[in-house]
Length: 212
Ligand code: ZN
Image (cartoon, rainbow, N blue to C red; front, side):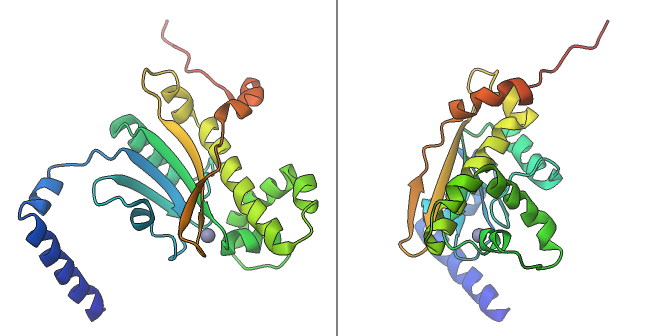
């Protein structure tokens, strides 16, 4: 742990050398433009790969960058980011070589995490034909990582928080990205939320005024 404190002191000194008011300004509040929903994997440092510093990126991370509708933690982050911070862009970022996705694609039991990863099995079920058509295992897992991101963006669009935000003047844009650990590069999957429009009649709900 000593290394952590040493690093922290070095970092503070570096920041103060650049701007003596750096921390004073940060302490005044945050107005991040982006919400980043990524994997907990230690090789995907959200701020570093996006070149954003403190105050610019509101972050939620979990195993395999999932948007699960019963996850109160994710929903709380999303509501705060959208309704209070008014972020302009919401990024779901997956990454190739994701251990969570690989575990979900296997038929082994890993314990408690299986219940979380079961949500990825639903992605496999929805896209089984496409996934089975890729014979190379590595390529198949890479495609599953991409499809998982696309489905999680869809899950985002289904939340009442995003549905309500879409009715406002400046709704946030939703993006699906994938990060390649081997190259360090981010790729935009160009997820078009209009693709999900065909399911609107199932998922869309409106807030009715119940007052008499
Ligand atoms: Zn991962």
